Image 1 (cartoon, rainbow, N blue to C red):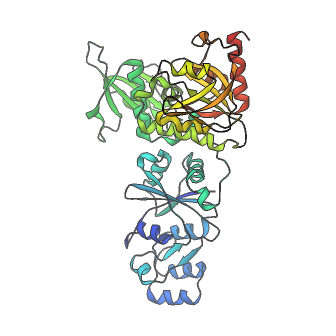
Image 2 (cartoon, rainbow, N blue to C red; image 1 turned 90 degrees about the vertical axis):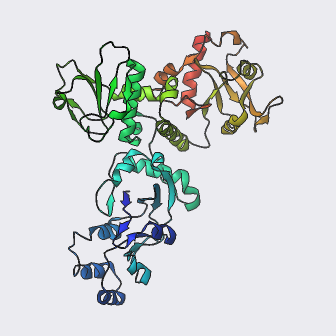
Length: 456
């Protein structure tokens, strides 16, 4: 399949409302009245092209050719309107036609693809960088070939539209892996992350006014508040397979930090002022729960999206494991109450998360600042109301520890780092319900590891 994007302006003005209201993809390259009458008698795209050559070079109306001949079943088309992004799937009955109506002629929207159902995705903060950059320059209608755009579009369609449309794409292979993470981020997100990483690891602080379009050589300037010498620190970030030539930065008076998410930094050898940052370090920094408070909300949203994508792709009939917060941040007693009463509980507004469990699933009790301290299997068919406060719970049969020895739970645990190393993947730990969910094999690995820690 392919992903396309439609620019909304024609000689007749902004056509987005027409597309949304009339369930079409529309564009211009109209014919005069004489040629329209000829086309009425032989309504085919071949005839349209023959007549269009009377008015335009073929290259000029190539977007119409792409719409009519290259757009195929199950392709996805994107459009942007008033700061919001919309997407639609090409269906079996989504065919090209020439609209002879007066409204279509006056609005320069005579070339159309019918039977299109548009869905709103959200504003710029809600869509990935690989989509946003796809709208920069180019023709009225063209393919987006950015890495990750197909997987993102398919997954969003499955989440938003599949139930209504009665069609679902095969499960896209999206997960919280580094490549997918960077593909979803905007270039500005990558810049923000490097700044936050430098703040956390070096204590450097950004001077906001230095982030200007006029300083194309670097993204912004930072300073070291611990240094007695006032010196500048510069950063240059490139997202994607883009190389950076360090030789261009020789006139800058200060250290320069370079990061390219997929490209190389050239001509930096031998210069102590040039520091190349491994993007993997910044990726791991972004998904580390201890950094949650300084990770921009937009980036956190994409971390959640990737873990939700994995959950969406899980076998719904299979057994899963869920790492579940023990509420230690808000209560000194809830954690021990869960374990001693053989329950997995959620309190207040978080009670909805309990409905993620079904009978047979595994509850992996996650204690903040430590990790997984205990593991149990859900044995109740439906959740129950807590007796003493607002919340829900499921009954569990404890697997580890087996002897009720809960005095050791804060010394016998599997840390977040250990979990990532054992399962060779990342997780979003900074929420009540840790995502993505685990499959049975992954749960078994953690059960075996925790048993060894308990000497069982």
